[in-house]
Image: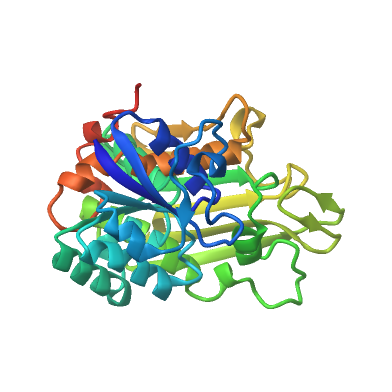
Length: 357
């Protein structure tokens, strides 16, 4: 039985919290919440469960460390406040508490992360003899596990394309995702944060470089591209309302180039409702979203990953899968040597232990 603290209860955290409460091999011992409206509330209430747990949310990190958990599930948004997130993670790691997380997506490929990010966390891991693992569905599964599976089926690969094609219209996250991508902005506005020079490469370039490393392929260049789509009609959705002339879809990618040709591409096509960017690719069968891997080679391989739920929207289903990528790794990470862990370090069979109960 692993003693676990859940850190944050947002779009991903509420799903990981519910999973921790439900799993018989995990014991929830603490919950962190930053908002005053959540502090003091029972964990069950924060994730939509009916039976109280007796565990109430706090913003006191010291009190959570004092509980001596085996692991913290860190799902708090970190990309907009990286220094604070590093400090919070380091506090747990240095105290001997392992951390698994879905934020700070640079750490999905820790060997590719910059020194300013990797260095303090490595020191904290060493100080506390603890481990840190970060993953998700994208970045994460689509660019590592799914790609590795596809490549295992070819005798020769000429190119690899990893795609997320997703309608974000029902994703209630304008505060970060919507504003970062610039949904609702006009052509004359300042370029959105996510598409400033070098940002796409910073977030997704590690996936490209990591794949090249595993393939023993030397890239001449890693570059980014970005294309906006502005609507002619008003679009209303949960994410936001977009007026005529404003941004309602984006297409962007990081490309690993060899001999002038992209050979490893990680691409996103994200839109607000199906009315946006009608000429761009859609998921097959009219679905809301897909994570796709295409390997052009001998033979050609295409893997399509759909997530769905009988009650929740597909975007929520994607958040559940994001949570699963780290909750399912808790036991292995707790037994791992100290340091930063990447997905290729973990035997894949270890990530399914405990999911059927």
